[in-house]
Length: 531
Image (cartoon, rainbow, N blue to C red; front, side, top):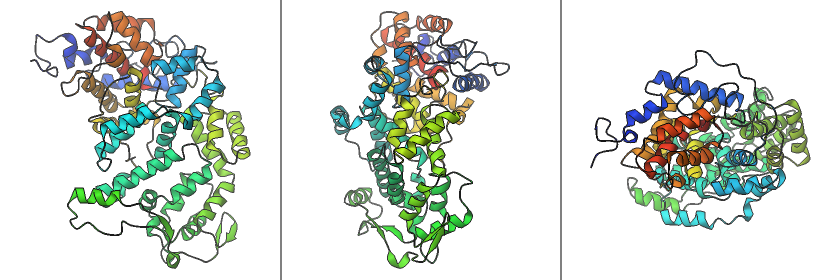
């Protein structure tokens, strides 16, 4: 049988040649891919008009990526609200989750803003039996990175509690730890990182003070930022510095003396170990069995804790780490810092002063309740504005999970960790304590090609070659394209882009190939790279 990955076989159809598929996107050279990335960042910066065009210019598969613009177009950001109910619903489900299925988009299109937000926020009432069935059927060994990775992706795709998984993902990139920096046997590292992720899931919409206190006692965080090594004789400043700079206050709102005094308050913080060592350190099965029986517990080693008075943010007392967090959260700095961060996560990167004033007031009145702030964002005019629509670049995980959910694909996520890492993101291992930079940093000529390679491998290479989900059942190129455009692009691309997609898909030889071709073009489009 011919190998679908081979490009030089004259008997292959046009959609079985990798070089031809790339040629249809106009990305045969990295320079042209750089043009595509310019268009993508233009969409994310300026938003997209209701007719699918970026400002005054049309864009889409086959035309926006074919010619790199000579210069960045001047685009007036669109004003007003997203009018179409289906487009509003799709926008909400991408931002407050990882995208909606056809059924979910149709259901949410019937809801008002308040009802839609409350349905997402009240996720504890959702039946998660389908998710549990998937997890049981796949029998993941979560002490192996590949299985742990696939288990989390399975949750992102199949969980009916989409906002819960979205918030878990947000906290992972904000209150960050790195698997590679935890140390010890791999089974220990993945256990501690998984426990941290479970903490974020359990406290997805918390009172923020309580989340900070919990993660301060989290073993993965204690190891990553060295509080587990801090003692009265040698206080370690790493955790208190990042606690203030990255997790709560922002730069410029504390002094170096505050860092030193806070470090003294966190001394002596420890957690219990497994109780014994494996008889054979090289026996992976024994290591994993030992980890299964270990439940680390936090404690303060009194002989290592600094009991003297400390002065922090102008207040003097015999403070411990929990007191430090209370003093931080009583300060004015976290108000703007956290509400701005949440606005950026859900809307766009340039909130108005009035929007932040409203969220800051709610933050105070609710006692720092993240749920209340997120709800206010999800029902706001800013969230449903054309300015917010497609204003953010999808991360690799959002792209991968969004493709699976949008097309309702059946995929076991084999190789997913390699795919996402090639695109610039590896779950459990952000690049540093600041997390992933996000935004324009996700898109370059290299990472855009990695995205296209992922889509190509997923649908066309013999190792994977999965069916295109809801696009598998089509009677024509027009139908395949229409299905793809609605499921993946909100039906919101220019007429010329749609016509060019139909022209390309018409060369496919059967329904499955048409579905794969339409999926390939839609998923590779500049529009799908934004959210």
